[in-house]
Every structure is written in structure tokens, then in C-alpha cells.
Length: 160
Length: 160
Image 1 (cartoon, chains in turn orange, blue):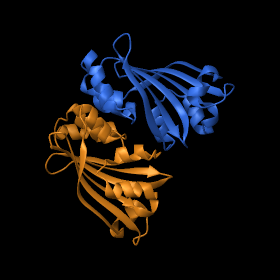
Image 2 (tube, rainbow over the protein chains, first blue to last red; image 1 turned 90 degrees about the horizontal axis):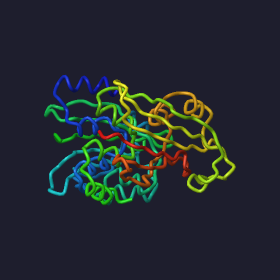
Image 3 (cartoon, each protein chain N blue to C red; image 1 turned 90 degrees about the vertical axis):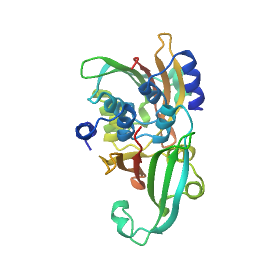
Image 4 (cartoon, each protein chain N blue to C red; image 1 turned 30 degrees about the vertical axis):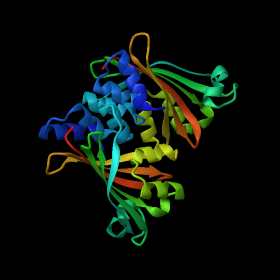
């Protein structure tokens, strides 16, 4: 993905703030950037959490249709309880170490902090950045580990 | 490192801009963030590049004193040829795959882009963030791969 080209395309539709531009294209932890920007901690509020068969997502995640996938839908909220980011993630269960899996499924912890806590070495591959029908930035990326998709993530940013 | 505590400490000394706060504490690619912020490409200008024995750095890099370390000193410059970041890196040669080593030693390419190009899975561990004697943010971090220090990096940001 040519980030600068995509950024210029987005800015033809509406101008983006500094923090929006950065969050849209970073391949680092969004939580860390958001916390530094807000100068305060953010929290995760889980909306939905479930395990289901990969089904139609199998191809995207490079797993079998019958493989279990953990789906997590969360809001990232600031200290004043404002929703800053809405995020969904899909994680093939078979690629999770037990301790990481437990944290992911039980605790309201942002993904970036989970990766740091479990010292997971990975890289992020940005797939798509666009504006949704409410003019929010919506992006999709994969977290890759051991050459496999550990997690597919989709994020929507409230206008920051 | 408690990033928010360190950030609050820095802001007692001087106020930081949004981009400074983000660059200071991100564990993602600084180049990507800088390019999105500037809305234009940045380039690396190599000041110095040499291979020397680890010596006194052996402990920091967790290698033998007699191991070879690649030292690189660069400026990251924007399209108008302004220096935005000054960076130094130390990389134990024995931890580099030949293709990555060649790119690192021969090409004027930012580290974040090299890691992406070579699909290197890693994590970054922030060691220190402070203001230097010219009031610039100076930070030090390790890039960890296979549980070992692939690279120690020190960056100073021009006031952005």
C-alpha cells in the first residue's frame, strides 16, 4: 500500500487532523499513540467476544473454514469515557499461545499492550484505509507472526 | 517504562507538540509517522557508517566485546532538505541476514522501511526518553528479534 498516495486521496475528501493522519497509517501500537496524544490512559470496553468457525473469513485469515476464530469487538475509551476508537479483531485460535489466548479472551486489555506484555514479535501489514459513511477513518490491517496472520484488525476512529 | 509518567515529567520542562509526544513514545516506525505528518516522503542521509568491535557496548547489545557491530549515523530529511531527525544505530553483525545487512550498510533507507521490506517480525522496547541540552527530545530503544537485540537506536527530534 502506498500510504502517501492513499493519504492524499483521503484529503481530497476531507482534511485530516495530525492525529488522524498518524493513526491512519502507523504500523505501531494505536493505544500507545492515543495515550501519548491524550496524555492519559485509555481503556478497552468489550462489546462482544465470541469464538466461531472461520467460515467465509477462512481465506482472509489463511485458515480452514472449520477452524475456530476468536472475534472481539471493543471500544477504546478515554478517561472521560469518550469512545475514541471502535475496533473489531479476528484471531485464529490455533495461532495463540495459551497465556495470550486467556488474556485476549478474558481481559479488557488493548491488543498493543497484550503484544508488549507477552513480548510478541510481529509486524503489521496495512491493507486498507478509507473514510466510512460517517466520514470516519476506517482501516484494516493484519498482525503477522511467524509468517502467519495472528490477527486481522479493523478500526474506526472517532474524529480526533 | 511508564510512558505517561515520563511524558508528564517532560511536559514540566517544556510543552510538547502533538507530533513530538507521539514520536517520543511510539514503538512503531518513526519514518511512517513522520511521512504521514509531513504528507511527503522523507529520506535518509548517511553521515557515518562503519563496522567496529562491540567493546564497551557489548553489555548493552548482549554480545561479546570482540563481536562486530555496524554503526550508522544518519539524518532523516524532508522534501525541503530540512533535517527532522538525527539517528544513530548499533547492530550486531552476527544477527543480520545477508540481504538485510547489505541493505543496511549500502542503502540510504530508513530502518522502518528496511524492516518492512525484509518482512522482519520484531518488537521495540523503549529504554529512555528525555530532553537533551538543546531541549530536543532524545530517545533510546532496542529493536528485539528472536529474543535478541537486533538493533539499538538513539534518535533526536528537531522541534516539530
